[in-house]
Length: 292
Image (tube, rainbow, N blue to C red; front, side, top):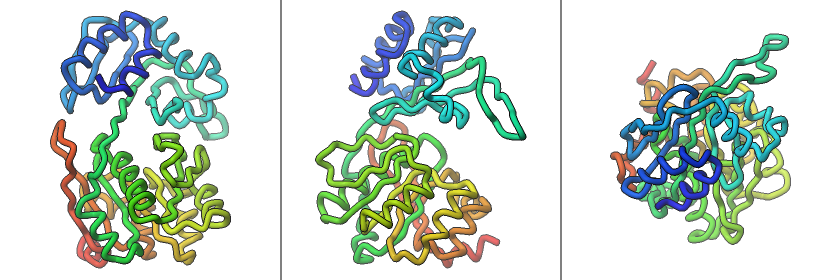
């Protein structure tokens, strides 16, 4: 059984943990969905399966309390953003009722649904993309995109470790959501929990990186932060949600970055269910002018 799944089962009430563990013995569990009043659901290699336990309000409350280390208040900032970060690079999606103040979400109450994503380590998957980076003499800035759940963070981690350990490059990772599980001897500089803009600023000012890597860019603040350091001379590798190059181009904040020349190459990734190898679709930046 995936050791990451074993760890996450410790956060669940007994009967839910037992039901998921039974499935985990025979297939790779990618996600556990816990919805109040609904059957427990797991996703195994892209297939959703309903299990027999119907989740109770007490089981939701128990799981949230365990995930937050008995201090929900300490996690309110990320809960407002829709997730709980758990030590070790786990992120749990949260759904509830938003409380508004001055036009902003100030809190989330009455949590009814949780989505626990189970990570797994896949190494050596950079393949053709890593070759493109190497042939650029490690000057290529890359934006990786896919629909959710394909494995963008897994690919970013593999690229970071390969650049650091095999090619001896100074790599800084901006791990805003605490999703990168990096060993202490990996040889990368990991800035954990920083907003992307601040993390990038600190990495450039103090760590002298040869590559900066960050996950899931896309909002206006992140775009502004990246634009503000575009003349720093340090290449980026980042990721974004998009199902195609056309969809990527029509995201306003991403388009600003592409038009500003932040990235040299966009790379769409796909992966067959249960497969460890990625397929890459390369789009040079000058090709995006045809998408208007």
